[in-house]
Length: 269
Image 1 (cartoon, rainbow, N blue to C red):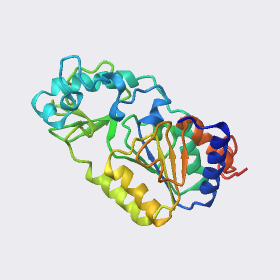
Image 2: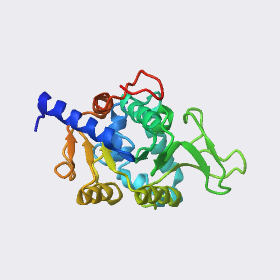
Image 3: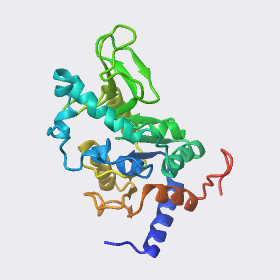
């Protein structure tokens, strides 16, 4: 269903009012936000496998699983490196920068992201929970040491740990693996603190830990905003639903709230 320009304008104005009234804001972001940077969107890590199968006939969920990594790390690394290559050269988009700017101007803004591209931190957000980890940090499965990399260019696949010669892996959650305890704890702490505005951006809300807080907020009468060009299970429940691309909607929301993206740190309007 197409959304009229007048409906979009009304939604943006309503979202701006909610931003103005909120004290503690939680953004929950998914692959749709990074799609505006040109990244593919398959399950948040790449649209390279739209038919859900790889070029060697394995379902992508199997190739990128923790079990496969333990048995055949070369297979998992093959497709991880393809995904990283598809991300290489991409940069944060105006949506990422708008969220970071809001944190700088407003203060209490937390981002929970399903994405593994690191764009929120690159854009300047500080309070970021990378629930699925990041492709840019490699961790040794033997000695546990980690290091940051700007890209996988020049890496031997699968790469060895420069410290102990063990096997490196990206510090991401593979299919079938548990979410990291530290990230889950941080997320629970944010929820216990009681956000008074939750903004879901570019996610299909398929995971319970993504949809759950939004449903909880709706039940409690806490304002909620969804930004997604498509329909999700939450679209008819949230206070404001913007059927827009995140890179367009987020800067427009800040503008409607009186936050100037060009002014100083403490300025409004």
